[in-house]
Image (cartoon, rainbow, N blue to C red; front, side):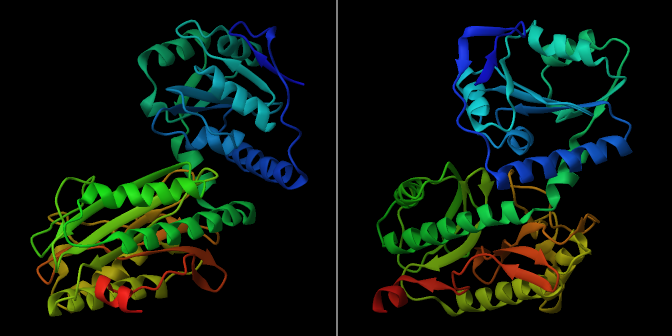
Length: 401
């Protein structure tokens, strides 16, 4: 049995939760790998304990430590340098989900502001130096609770520590991301299949969301834009009706088994114009250039420069600046927007890093253009994770085939 603890830290008969079964051997190995990586990084930084904090919009670190989805406004995991972790959530259903997953078996419901279960465990550990992942996002009530429980301890940010640990994906993680890739492809197919003049933008997203949820997606982040060369960026869907000749752009990012993956494509309602074709050729060359430099040890800066140099060579370098759009992609994983692929970011991308290469920006050729593929860094370069053809899709061509 896995015990769901009450706020005081003692087992409550009403809180006993049947275990969902012990983790498989593969899952145990993955859990132990993660805890080993985190503890090695903690030792380097002199941390006696780490608190992974998850507000409602940044849950990746708690997911990394528990492999369980959480939905509440506050969840956290306390990982000591030695011994078993403890997890808490303000939402009882989250605590039950963590307990059922089996990665963490000491799980409690967090009742703020007292948080007695958390403070009693901290008192037992008596750490001298504590790292808090997402310390920058701690609500005042929780920050004061930690300071009150640890009056003599140094509390520092461990956000970068966790970002660095999560950067390299294991084979276990990449297998999950491959499942996300198949859902990306299905979502894009649903996107193209529904396009026609007179369709409102929100109906496109509704069709895509329906297909993604049918395939088991936990969530989806999606932006869209439709129109001609006046379009300068993407937004949530609106009521605008598609017109013949529109280019419809999207970033489509489903979450499967906790992992996000993105596809970036643009499609034309009807026949593409010369400007739209020329724009695609420019952006496709930039994606190819970014992919070509990927290798273990490349920096995010170098991948961004490779893409931007294509725009510069063709006279469009100004459109890669902060006046338009500077980001040439970003990392993927348990958070949908990890390390940015941007000039000046010297983050080293190791073997196993997963990120999307997308030189999305505005140019006068056809307005804002969206094109990009997610890749994983391998020993020999980049492996593109999706099978969707990189081309300028058009409804006339798709329906003729």
